[in-house]
Length: 293
Ligand SMILES: [Zn+2]
Figure (cartoon, rainbow, N blue to C red):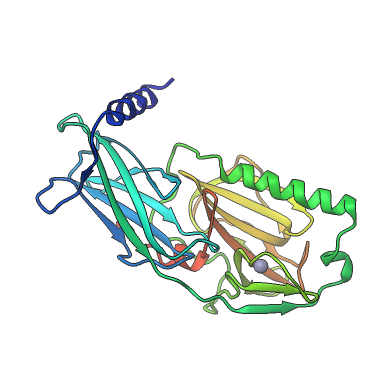
């Protein structure tokens, strides 16, 4: 066990014995949500002030664990609000073990606003909608492999500064959260956002990270998944070519490959996804995320 891990376990054991303390104005510790009233699909973040950078901070929103990182003299954690999540009050809980303070447990509630998603009707070749059993097994196992990846929380924050569009241009990506009706049947909501672009258009990394997966899957086609650390991943689907390999470290803006129409695609486009733990979040929210470092 690492020293940091051991300190966390000790902190949690100590905190299990403490009564809850609700953060108040007179508290040295203060927790704020950014934005103050996030929506379903957003990437929000919690900011803990008043604890030193040496503090060990653990916490959760609802049942979802948070991963804190040192930020602006305090600590911050991203909160992914899944596409299928419920709006309303979201209880949060933080445990803080600061060498200069008594161990503390803070609780509170954030409020998540609803968001309406459009319905989208698509027609694809029948073999891409109603799968034969072998293809169905393949698609399910590929989906499970990605789910396992998203549950892997790399300990180091690799991203810094703003996230950038993965393809050049100014047209916004479309279709995040669309309730899809494919060949007349309701399907899972669209978990990413699509940029229409010509085949061969360069696709670049939205931020610094490590290439976690390069693969050719049934629905996503040729894909790259980037691990940005602390449970944050970005996804690039339907690529024509891929110019990176698993394990490569990439910088923001570094080419990953080119736009294509591999997998289940109605034409050349980039499907750009963002995943925070199990939460499918709006890549546009990631692009508008502003942290000072
Ligand atoms: Zn898509």
